[in-house]
Length: 277
Image (cartoon, rainbow, N blue to C red; front, side, top):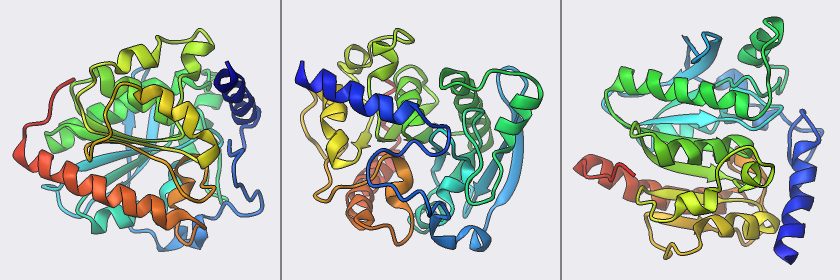
């Protein structure tokens, strides 16, 4: 019961703001992703969501033969949550597609173009409304690269990424920063804990230290392995994928654990023997 009350406290902090849902270790004066946006090297692309809303994205491609990773932001943010992050994944041998979801906003003076279009067209922009944008990005990347994709989500989008990984054969694996079973508790979706039982695809789940009990609930019954990993930071950590921002305090321990996981994942992708569910 104590863990549920703790969960609802964190959830209430997470849901109250459209301007960067970061209750743990946040610095509201610094959302510049370490000032690397101007240095980013990417191609701007667009494709339609399932309801025909145009989605904007940044494609960081280094080699079409490399695995493709879709980067999904947290609420109040946009694709530039991954400025300076996608390039590091590029250096590790992964192409990246950072998308603007309709549940988001501007960051570091950079607009969320999908969110702006959705508002102009009077389309809803809540958490679950963005799931179709993630699914559309999966379809776009799958068709472009002719291979299953890796999903990486931040806060609310990390949970949506897990749902997609569970049910979508076009997803090979999932990386989730600060996920939780909150859509089930709010009566919006199926029980994620129950759906995770027997899940065979590789996953990397993590969060701020204070949020780890919430994430641990999702992987009960899963033995700790190098391909299905719950990473608990030694430091206080960060809510969402901002833990990966360049020069982020305590960020390097996340990177070290994630790099080890991605080496294992890359080996499985090379062999081509990943499970479909």
